[in-house]
Picture 1 (cartoon, rainbow, N blue to C red):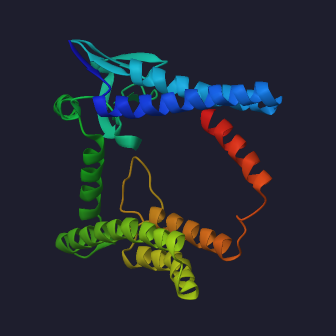
Picture 2 (cartoon, rainbow, N blue to C red):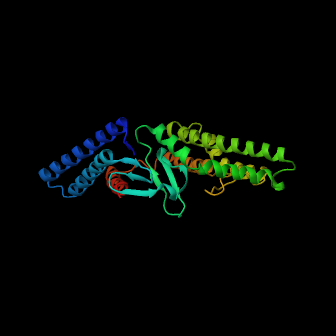
Amino acid sequence: MMEYRMSLGNKVFMYSFAVAFIGGGLFMLYLAAQRQLWGWWFLAALVGGVGYLLFRTAAKTALVIDETSITVCNGFITRSVLIDEVAGWRSGARNNILLVLKSGERPLTIPGVLEQRSAVETWVDGRFTDIAAQLAKEVTEEVLHDERYGLTEEDRARRLQQARKVAAYGTIISPLLFLWVFLDPEPVNLLMLVLLAIPFAAALLTWHYKGILRLYTTKTKPYPSLIFAVLIAVGAAFFGALRGYNIYFFDLRAWRLLLILGIGVTAA
């Protein structure tokens, strides 16, 4: 049997935040009692609850692998699946590993904060099929054998490689433009024109590559896609407009209400 707990670095990080949140909650309780600020009771309970959540997650997160099953505990919920039920694996958000089940049920998530991360990845990759790599291979085969994408197989392979490079460049350029808008949006007019031109350029590129490069993406058909670049560019343009007209510099009471609602939504 193999057992993996949360790594020491992640534990220290989460325990530090847990102590800070719990301490903040206790301080808010003190203020609420001293100054009769009844709304702070709710906020104190919320902040303290987040601290407890972080503390328990750091203390209880674990992965246990035996001869027949895989068990994951995320702090509050423990879930087990049989090894024979796993169809394959794919990468998830926050460096997690998702074990896809043959039954079609919700994947089992292996947290990305475990100790001996490389050993876990090696075991998973050696035991199960890499679904992302398999789907990418299927897309490649589909493009190479479809005459709509080029006259010869070599031409289709070249266009597929180019489309993947364009999609990769898009995922790099758009976030950099967003950072430019956030830090110093000058010259504003030129930057906004570039941001608003990206969706039109993306549409032209999808036409140029005859559908190999797309403006959407699906898990079953991972064709090269510019949807991420387009969404980030549009979001950057929207943020630039807000910043240009100082819309987000409003009354302090509104920010206080937004903070309370934001913490509530985050906790939920």
